Image (cartoon, rainbow, N blue to C red):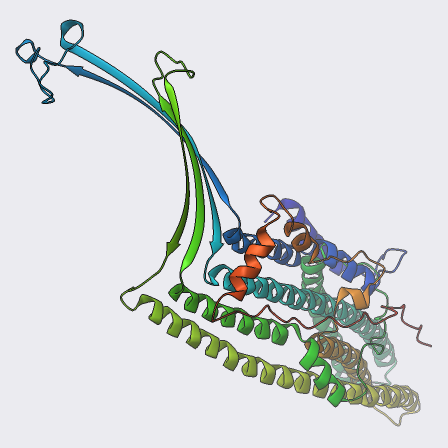
Length: 512
């Protein structure tokens, strides 16, 4: 773990204990947290890098239509030593005694240099299928990037809401300690004058001790949530502003949520593209039965390199060749690969339906949680109002002897629990709304923080389409390769992205 990040986590632990003492002057908004995570979150950055890696597979597939150029050079030197008994003997059978150099040593050398140019003319649809499969893989990668982006944003929203909840819980716990401290002081004073018994004082002491214990637990829980916030956002939370409304992105009914999720859920769209990729691989496997045609041009120079005399010692040879290769028998390998590709495509088709059902389940689950949380908010607000009235009335009635100390302590406990329930209900409602949007495919930076520069996952891909290695006759060769095959593969059909939905996250209204 890097020391600077470890220091931030330690700061989260230390700051939680003194949160109530001092807070930054400027409140941090949810939009600020999402923007920071969108630009710096390592999980999201790693997925973007993985997508750029995947873009290269498309270039590599198209290289099957492009020519290759190679150079080769060799140098050979040889020395032959013949004993005296073999000198002047006809070793090569031409009727003339062979001659050797001084001491029966003969030396020779030769050099060769050449260029070879190879251009595929037709691959029977192999390369066309590989290109379409790679294109579908790239589009699937973009959907995976959308899914990871939504996951990171949900994590940011949950961490933000958790910190807001735990900060408010800590304030409630601290207020409870303050109230019970005053209650103990009052009970002690009334005991000293004989109005209360030692039992009343002991009850106040026990409730105060319990409240202090719960306060320390709240401090520890806030430290944990602050560390989680720092992990996903990259910095410790300061004074967090209230959560802005997500109503402009939420549908009016679950039927609309199902419809949007069917069209925009990144996991479902990614699986549909995975099925298109495996379908293209079936065409590629079948193309292995087809012939392939390529052209080759080679130029070669050879001759003595010692002494080097290119004018007289070196000769030149050129050749142009068109080669057609036809697979006749592969021992069942090609047929097996076709069956394998078909079954993989069947698996992807079935998985599309599995993912669709999971998406429907997710929308149902989070929509139900959203409705329940909204109902809990209304109930908890009424509970807080009634508990506050009951606590105030119980304290006044104790002053005239109609209520006991334990009645006051119980009323205070019910009020604090009601306030905690209200805080938790608001957090649950907001997180459930974020999960509904993530399942629908609407929880994206372009809808939440449109003013922040957006990452374009297709920019790198567009740049690679005309990168080093492209040749002007690549497209005609590709059209020929794709057209003259009995098993053509289809280019992937990606659904268009929905238009951005404004206006983005706005500051939450101030509660009265």
